[in-house]
Length: 431
Image (tube, rainbow, N blue to C red):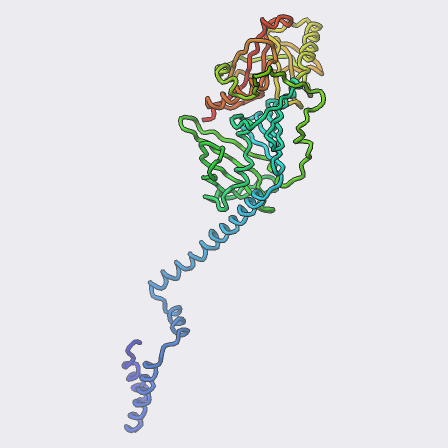
């Protein structure tokens, strides 16, 4: 407590400016000294001390108080939102972990997608955009459907090396860690407010080799997963990214999607006794090494189509007949351009001055970088396996599709020995 002797003496001095008897002055001095002694020996109260500190802050107290205020602000702006964000992530992980059904689409590159449907305990359906569908009911059998040729094959055992199986990310999504490694922030997509979370490590046994980051974006409103971005960096290869969209957790799925009975009109692929056939990319790894080159501009007359690709010969015949009526001679071999069974076309390259009328269409394709491979033999043979292998090799060379798959056919219709198919894909580099 500060020395206040001088304060008491001053008080007495001021108070005794009038004529006060000496004995009164002594008694007043004694009373004030006694009061001071009681105050000095009384335990200090915390409230007065606090009030004194606030009313008379030193520079140290000011700095401390400023730091405390900033700490509160930081907690409000960072710690509390982080807690809310963590709860949103935990809710999404909980939904995925206990999901009895799950659907999603993996975008490998433009025009190249794999859609998967899962129904517990072991029903899966994988639908590849290049024209292959795989079904399994958990019995160890796998039904492979090839819509383009209306063929099917039933295989025994698990084929873990196939590209379709590599896109089977059900177990990885169902076993995401309970806490993310990093909170990415927020983004608004349409009317949805999304929060992003980065997972850097998946549980042991993950099929995502070379995983660099897995970003989960959660719809803040319902705490459900909206989409996932996956970055893969394997040794000696460029960075590759996949996008998982259309995630639906515990939505009602039609059980017929997993029916292991081949659809009506499909024919079994005949396999000689003692031999096996596999519709997997590895069968073509050494035969379809892509050549990357710069193409010329292409002008063509085509007819837009929907439905089975088996209609290709009919479509080409219609375009050929129409061009004969116009007196226009094709300037290149016939081709097909296949985006999906809901949107594809077929036709012939023609001079740039050609004019056509509906239902035919004149198209102009600019010069671009393409991946090309030539396959000799009958047109259309094993088309889906070829394309699966070709796409995989394109990815491994650091390219991704920049347009739908195309095929050019050369040779004589009645002579399979003269026939060849050029696989053609507009591409761009990933880095």
